[in-house]
Image (cartoon, rainbow, N blue to C red; front, side, top):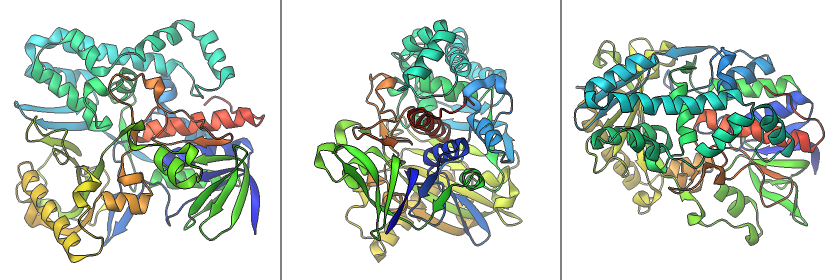
Length: 503
């Protein structure tokens, strides 16, 4: 038993859903397969006792309705294309940093307000600070002028290069640069360079020297241009809207449906086999899984195997989802915070604490008089290897670790431990189990010094098998995987003879 479609998509992460929506709107038939009962993967929401929690992502770029920001307002352009509305709330502060060396700096939407705070802390580096952030903005300006499409599509590359030769040449040169290397051309203060490391680590989970300048130019400039926003009702509003767009144009999304194998014949993907044995054939297959899950689990031929060290394996997370009494949150407390006790430990598992309180922007995600608090730190599967899921020792260890994190958080929020009314914990095991992510990883990253274009693109070693998501260019983050989905859809649509219109 089985049936056929034009494109089958494995996983309903944002990259896969974006590709499905763009292709379905163009007239291709798509079937999206999701293991869980809800879409979104790391960009999803879940509800408990009146609280709505973000499973992962909570900072969202790409919702500017000003098309001057080019390809970087992708969410707004995509939803306009689909005729779907996603209400969002602008956030005046992207992140509030609480770092060693008395570095306490909010990153305001208004660039000059942010730079003034940073210069106030490092007055001798004013010229270098301004020059460095101008450099990031120049990258953003180039990217904003270029239409989104596949870097593997010769027709797209020739079109963009022909229309924007100077910008393409300038961007090509910048792909060889890192954020940290660029920063060192302008500033020398070691404490300020540490701050730049955190600017990178906040979203890339790598220091500035390991972070491509192109990626930094997207995030660290767009926050002052397009800005960041929060979708009303939680992060799950984004995948739900993409699903609505897919269905609107006749596409199928099958939940509680797990893929066990990508079917390959003579080096060509021909469809998938589901866990229940059903087969779906297709002209093209898109995997939204990590590169390890795709090549080592879904592809059965060992010739396609990817080793752990073929790419940098990003860490996983330990997460706390807390329902708390609102009285413990100070007036004018910002939504997003990053807290570091020691520079010696910031990049080690648990060294950097991320805090998010989205109910400060959107009260609908918490009961009256309460707040949602999402706190998380990097973690590794190995730390939990001696524990077994659902065993009392596993539960006890999660609670003990959470108590230690709350004690640290209490430096920012005195009394937080007594204000907790609901608590849910997630470890790397949770990410592996529910998100089908190899070792619970945040994804595949480049090693320091690699060119950003060495990131895997949408094509794979198997003909007609394509990839979208954080294992592909440009990398981690919701707006990045959205770009990967657009790029993937663009390549497939041209290959199948019905190219997408530029957004």
